[in-house]
Amino acid sequence: MYYLGRKLPLEIRYGNPGEVAPAYVSGISRDTIEIAGTPQISIPASDLTFAERSVRMDLNAELSEKMIRLALAGIAFSYDDHGYWSPASLMREWQEEGKFNHSFYEISWRAPDRWLLTTIPVPEAGIRGWEPKARQ
Image (cartoon, rainbow, N blue to C red):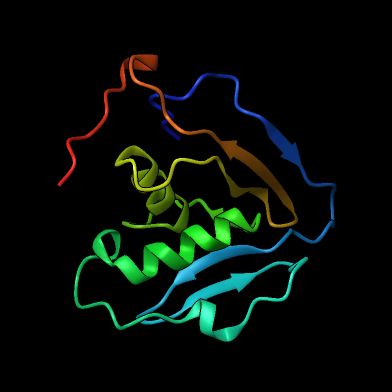
């Protein structure tokens, strides 16, 4: 995982063996934000659907609005270094573009029943070689 612009060490919470993960965005399908884990809040179905992707996910305004709302509610976002746009990578992208100026939780796994929750802070210019992206 690369955390350019973020001060290390990051804050990490380790789940206990067998502990159910907190609510997190596990994936994004064609028009739905998928939630897994145990939600601590009720999430209306309308907050999890968006207009079908006719543009790249990182440019879909409705998707970013809904994902940012979930982040502000404390929902985590799954990390996947094999996927092109994992939920956490989208959130980092929006932070780096200045569209989302808050920390968020990234969830990943060390083993099938061992998750960890990392707080991803907003990047800062000059830290670990990061400079803000030019706004489009």
